[in-house]
Length: 278
Ligand code: 13P
Ligand code: ZN
Image 1 (cartoon, rainbow, N blue to C red):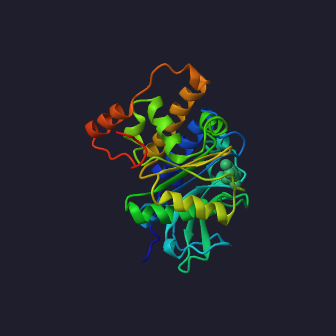
Image 2 (cartoon, rainbow, N blue to C red; image 1 turned 180 degrees about the vertical axis):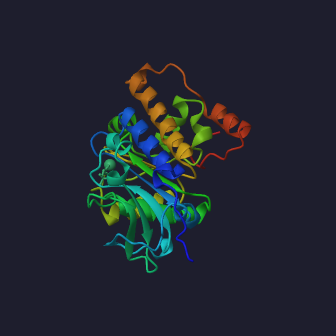
Image 3 (tube, rainbow, N blue to C red; image 1 turned 90 degrees about the vertical axis):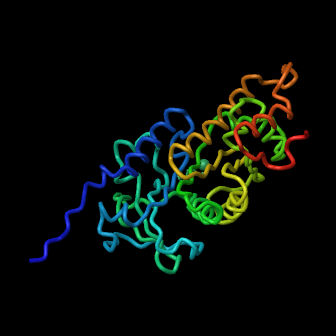
């Protein structure tokens, strides 16, 4: 007698729990007002198949942009228009598990989005960034976008040159250069949700795990939810200090380039070239 293998409860899956916790914490921090922000998390087939029959496709959604590099890959992703505050209590309508098909032209919805909703409108930026990060980091898994308040504020007050913006952040908190020695990439202002912003974001992701969208928000990339959250948290904290200071003429002293260099050496990180003047 053939018996179907019993699947475990998807709501108990660690990756679903992580998505529920992260979205709630991000909302509590005020960085994901209304439906602001989105997260996508690359999953292994073995992780998903403990909970789902991966051949049971609920819906097929065409992609406007081909992602052949992600063929047959699985993601859990936040839904478009979904409020982060509600994900914790309503995961099956606000989250979805999708698989990119063998051609990279469609995605299969395997679980979630039960009310007929769709993945985030920022899917081009997420998928293209995953492709870019996987090329430089085999352990890469998470792309997170949110509207971190002070980092947005800083894009009005600070010039948008990547080197000088990064150096200001590095100077605001001692830990910054250690957490993001690869510096912050900055795009010009662009219309969100488009393939064009996805392409530009992914171009920056080749060299940076943080990419700033002026007057909009930030994208972070990482190998775990904690690491990605922590990366954005660290940049946001530095930006908060910058905005609390408010007027750079008030600054009486800061961390010098020589001290930043000593920090980097002590923590064995390589600061992006061209930012420090030693
Ligand atoms: P979604 O609701 O489509 O994820 O969009 C939110 C957002 O932050 C757009 O940049
Ligand atoms: Zn946004």
